[in-house]
Image 1 (cartoon, helix red, strand yellow):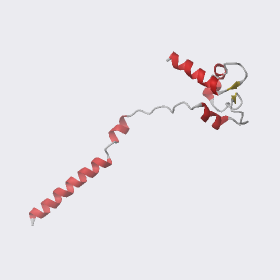
Image 2 (cartoon, rainbow, N blue to C red):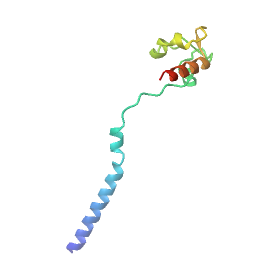
Image 3 (cartoon, one colour):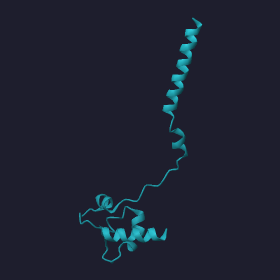
Image 4 (cartoon, one colour):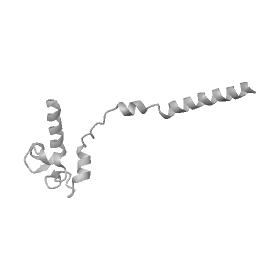
Length: 100
């Protein structure tokens, strides 16, 4: 009778051990991974988020809520027309990548 109880206990311990391994398998990875800043939005996503007049370009008024883009607006507006289009945005990103 003791052998059956010992066998059941052993099986229970093994099953519990396997279950806990599955439950906590990636726990160490999550804790060790540093938080990364949100990736920069693509221009099309910026248009969706900020283009109030649906012109497919962005002006300083539309970007007033975005502190980062407001600070670099003059640099983004390469042709000086007070609007940022996708080409200007991509040129600015390419220029920034070269500086990295």
